[in-house]
Image (cartoon, rainbow, N blue to C red):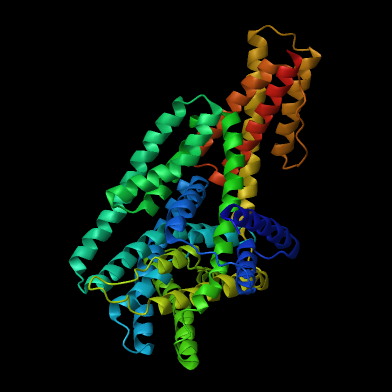
Length: 526
């Protein structure tokens, strides 16, 4: 089967599984992994190899970028300390304890190889976290912590991975060099992301051609990723930082038309890339199983259980011991055990861990085979299956059983209503101001129609009512100016952190759609 035909078949599988996911109410990543495993074990099906370079360059940058682009500076800042504890402290602790456990149960495994496995499985996966979170309703603050953690901890895990692999290849390791490299990689990646995000925002502000702007938008994560790689800094942190910067700047950087088209394109691309990453992960099962026949079954069971349980146990231990200490030192109310349990149970691993395992070198510097390479890859698959599949399937039931009330969600609804009220009042003020400037008869039926529409909205949002917002009115200038004025108010209250990013993007999208509809109506009447 040719590569093009394989891609078409895989796309069809993603579409079919996507429809089943919606119907069965099961998270799409889990079903795709299962589908990939079943296809992989089917006789006479050609093996499809997952190249690590494809994951690290084709899948990871755009998926990290779009998650960061749609995230909120304010939310991440509010939970920055918690994210740092998880993305750095927990990751490094997991590296050490998983390595110690595997080194203890696998005879003669070198410490460097055991540390490589610990580094591979230590970070939770941003792609998996986003995919699972879209299918279930997590408490808002919990979701912010999990998304922030998964965006940052890949950098910590991959730096630890590089040093563990280098130590295995050469037999030498320096703690001081590792510390310096970690700081350089982390802070260098953040600086590179900020600089490139700023340069890209300046470039994209000057672009007026829709196809060119969308192409630049699609290239942005790859440009940042490759630049960071050449500078030997964290490409993960660079892409995340640039995505956050460009996401914050997008309201003043892009026109409404380009923003609508780019958003639709990115939504499709993210869906397809997510689908391919999880499907390809499942397709690796058969070739990986074929590499471990030389090990006794009872030993494999012990090693698999150890590798699968240790990351989960370490995460639970960290969250239920370090979190209470942190909140006590901060003088903040401690979250209930149910919320802590959900954070601990939500540590899914995914395609990045598998790509790192597959990227392990075949031979060491002296020409000898990389120790236990096939076993490390198999154990990585075991960890992914235990966390992504088992935890992902059970998480919705646990959340339902805990019956957690999301107070943040209620607060967001009130914040959204107030923001809509501000916009409607601003629309009325601007339309009235323009009508008086142009000496328009205040009794004119066209003007009254526009004013009544915004007045109805104002009254509805002031009293908390809900109703459909129509696109009535035919006077292009008044409506266009009211949209510009509303957009300025929306950006202003966002800059003051009076609304969060989700509400801002919802209202911005509504204004963009209204402006697009207005433009079409105006074109039809000209």
